[in-house]
Image (cartoon, rainbow, N blue to C red; front, side, top):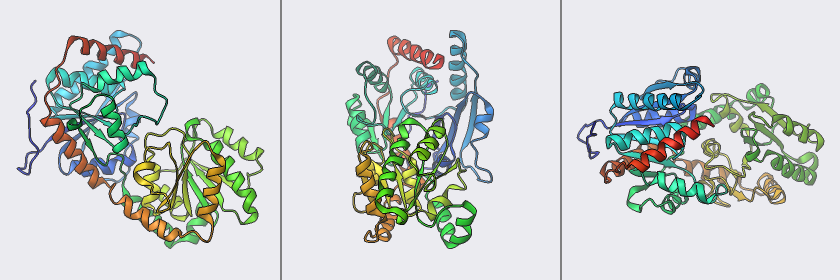
Length: 416
């Protein structure tokens, strides 16, 4: 099959874009809906069980994009790996996309889709919010990544740092579009937070949260640095005593027990609350009643929780290892950034933001204004821009050595 080489214009042509995802998470639905109003967007959801895909929908929300599911079980050999590749190829052949979007360069679904794109001369986009310093880089892995990234027609970078990293990987500047990629349903968090504030007493009682608190929303995993967050909060608590704000950490994960034990050992069990996992619909209320938001990750390519907090009009305190920090946080304007390894620095910022001299109202307004550039509408506009780049880029040529590399990486990834 030879794809149509199309220039995106206002002539009414509906560009077909297939987006490869594990599943469409709730925060991405608004972005895909916005894109689905201007292109024919098909989300190809690749999960190990169909129930995982079906569970990703947000009840009652109309969708303006299509879904195609590929469910697959455990891969136990080369035969199963090849069967999966054929499933991806058949699905894309049925869709007949003009462009295929991959969220990241690696992953079996992305490699299989890229293999199909090369074989059928269909433009491909690699979306990336990684930067050169977000994690430790191994030279051999970077060499493999460089080989694979070179096969994509275009790169969609979440910010300047991500764009520079794509250039470092060998993608030429004319094939890179920098624009809002990690965006959220701003209206969902803005409206939900405002509703919680209007009924503050009733909502506070329902959620069982204190009057003044710092909020963190996070998976309980090592890279989220929650132990150091609690350590920094402990230093702040020692300084402020009974006047200290509380800390509420929403989420769940493998480190929940370790975090609970650390809180108890630190004597902070009366000051740190762990409500557990909260639904997408329930999150805005926690943001709405908080005084400020803190995100302490040591490794986070972006961190959409920062977007959520800003949409809820909160001052934000964000680790400088978080990809969104350089794009969304203006030090002293809508929040502060910090070294996640430095508990004393974070403690000082907690004190600074909670202090009566801090103009939190102005910082809140600044967060609200900044996040208006990171909405589903801007996501759709950015997607159109990078699709234009991909469609007008010279077609990547499939060579035997590239096909062999992609097949090997797919098999290794699927067996891991």
